[in-house]
Image 1 (spheres, helix red, strand yellow):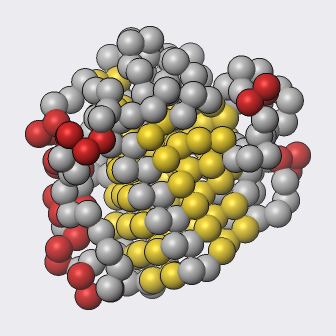
Image 2 (tube, rainbow, N blue to C red):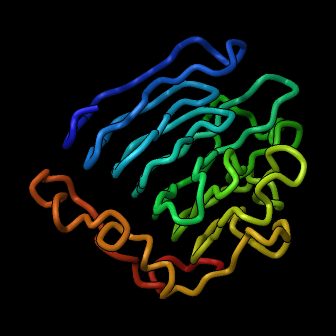
Length: 238
């Protein structure tokens, strides 16, 4: 909860298991908080990025349902996102962002991350237990996946409804300059809230512009990419 909290080379785990459903490993309410080379492991609701500005660099985060969720201004950079094997009747959802109003400046940003299966989640079950990038926990849910590697376990729809048509017109989901077998957007859901944004627009959701990172990150000593990577470096599908 304390402003300027820094965690480095630390693991956070909730070992309750998939059968216990919601079981948070880490809840963060700290403004200008930084997590560097940390690991967060659980199943449902692993990381509750609750509020204010948060930066995650080179972290490993594992889970099943809504395992990165909350209403913070949270940016994940160069992180490894591992999808674990859920219960037999469950689907996996990487994010569940909780923005409640259109005026709110919050979002979950995955920049230059890797979204793939945990080694314990066999490929033979990926179709039976499909994985989605996110779903609208609140009406104005906002999530961006930018210049990241999306593996084949991610369902071609990309995004999953929460309940009926709740939030499908008012959410704001975008994928920009991603790569990997799951990055093809041609079969993504056609909700009004799933947007195609320009590369220049995506610059607004970087460390410098979204977190005002140059004002506070340098003194932490944690490395970061201030803006976007050059498009030519990613070889991505946009």
